[in-house]
Image 1 (spheres, rainbow, N blue to C red):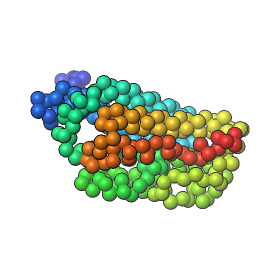
Image 2 (cartoon, helix red, strand yellow; image 1 turned 45 degrees about the horizontal axis):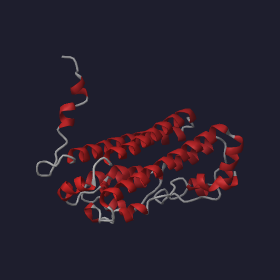
Image 3 (cartoon, rainbow, N blue to C red; image 1 turned 180 degrees about the vertical axis):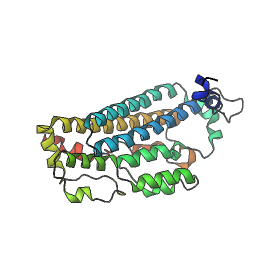
Length: 260
């Protein structure tokens, strides 16, 4: 028997995954579930693309790296666009089923934390936060111990003939990415004299900016929906989310702007 569309995509199983908890159920809970399930699917694809990006950079495959960065940026724009959909839900509507979420919270999205780790924004506290979910914790621990996309970019520079200092190449990859003044002159030179490397740099800046744009829209969506209330799961809600804004994941690529 030929493979069918619904068998290949497991449509029946997929459509059975939206199971509201509210009494009735409340109309907008289905939208809330679908939006967040779709987010998780996109996070999975972003991790998939991020791993390919790192491989392409280390292998000095510049066109493939740029194509992957373009796809990642397009996905981020889609994540931002999805905020428009969830903002059609009013605060009153969300309140009607919010209590049924109990302690569950977007703070528990292990895949988004994995993507942050892949970009270099690493915190052991985020690994420990997922102790109740051993598979997720194991994935986060693996990402925590692995080199980041920026570490792969530094190898890309080496492959392109740049003398990246050992202090940058041999850094502790479990630590968050910090600005490296010893690397910045190399980047400035690339911007002035090496268009292929400059293109990769600008694509990484696009990715960084796209992530910050999504964070901002997410913060405003939460503020619009629950105001300054405590977040589900006991988080500080909007106050916590605001602390994540305007924090670059590739600080060197921003630091050199004043010197170009």
